Image (cartoon, one colour):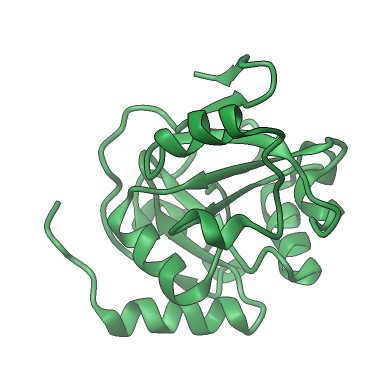
Amino acid sequence: MAKLFSSWHLRRASEIISNGGVIAYPTEAVYGLGCDPWDPYAVSRILAIKNRSIDKGLIVIASDILQLETLIIFPDKKTEKKVTKSWPGPVTWILPASDQCPFWLKGKHSGLAVRVTAHPLCRSLCEIAGPIVSTSANLSEKPPARSGWKAQMMFDEQLDYILRGSSSGDDRPTIIVDAISGKQLRS
């Protein structure tokens, strides 16, 4: 994938995230909505924009495993090896949440959905901004936006910024796997 984004746009998106903003950006398959996972106000804005229950929990993406250390716990080396072998890549894993993981990220669950993304724009954004919330840019139960234009049409003034770029071209959102049971929750 050609590098179609500039460092100015990445810095601007990062600045907005660090100031409590909500952005839209391309992911592996669709546009996502993102914010600082440690900011309860920003997360509540995303939930309100999507009309999504806090109970469902959210995904957090990162540029590397170190960015997720304070949020998750690997129960054993075998699980850690299985998960990290798939990263960076389009697999979201549910891992036990650490005691430091905010309740607004995990919802009613004991685990947190996390991914070290391989998408070049997302990785670059996370390198600058740190880990970010990543949930599809759609109203709950509706099809997600697959372009910046569609995200703008859906949410327009509810967003603080749209980081434009291309998705990786995947047909469907990343799979989600429970790291403990091995059960695939989204395929």
